[in-house]
Length: 229
Image (cartoon, rainbow, N blue to C red; front, side):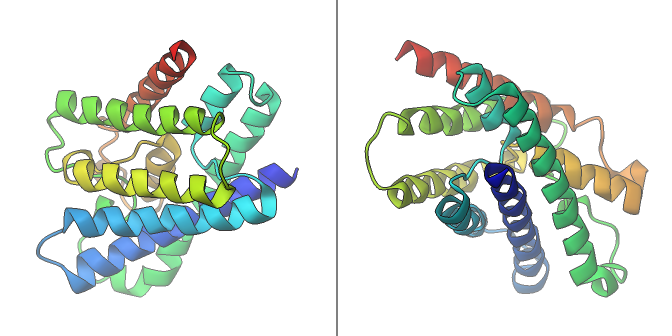
């Protein structure tokens, strides 16, 4: 139960910090151009701070259903716990999307609807092959890092810091290309929220297969690679 509470709180805080910061930076501070390194930094911090908090209090920092899935496949957690984690991640992501709407509701209503407030929107939404490849590669690195940390005896905060720096680096490289999901919950839940709350026609559901299947395939490849090494 303690782990599940941590999953929920962590997912909620991660997406709330990331999405709200994205609105501030991209539409208040830098409305004309998005700095990829700044994007990597604030999403890295949005992952680092909740991870630090939930690891300290709840002993978990897994806010990604793909990571939960690979841990179940590798017998690190039971399948029932994996299912509970995914449910909590989904609920946390939905409430984070609701928080974004609540904070920016009056301001957002004065602008044209923009899916980028919630879901991932790549630079070239039509280049599925490239975006799909980057989603696989990014998630692959995340899962390999998670698996390797189980065999490294260092302080928990060192592992959390390294994982956040890795995410910061990957997002800085990939964010302008794919929107950098690496996490189906991070994309699909806010996209569904946008679709239900605003306009289904602008939700780009056809593209949603990329941030869903890409991380799943990347996670499976990551666990296979980890088992071999």
